[in-house]
Image (cartoon, one colour):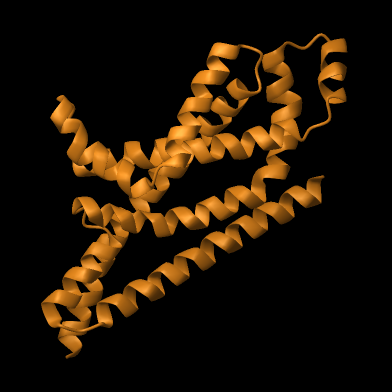
Length: 214
């Protein structure tokens, strides 16, 4: 029994590695994507604003699971093929990039318009104003909703099992099927709880740090 449990834990932890990889890649690329798109959405260049509106509407208005299945099973029918991992990376980055876009847009628009006028008086360009004045202030506003998305993301990685990617949940289900025991699900639940706890604590520290320097 002990050997069975040890094997089960080891196999599930292999899936955890892939879960964390999808999580890290998504965070690293979707947050900068969200910031760039948010800046575009508050610009005065209407065609860009309309394009970004369509992007956020599509990816926020359709289920992430559907997007994942479409990327892996649907796009090959159009002659575009991705590996399981790449399909997951691209889908998650675009999906969470859309959510972060709206979060950062709201953060940018929450900054008093007088800040823009002051920057203009100082001779700053639009890019300099955003980089040096607006974005740093907006970051303090968006930390709580960004933290919420970061917690949701670690749970959403379980959707990768839909394309047979050997992440945490899929490996847990495989162990449940193999040994006819719910231990695999219990182990997965404990791991998810630990991960969400760690993420929440990290964002609490970030929030506290920003409050300290505000």
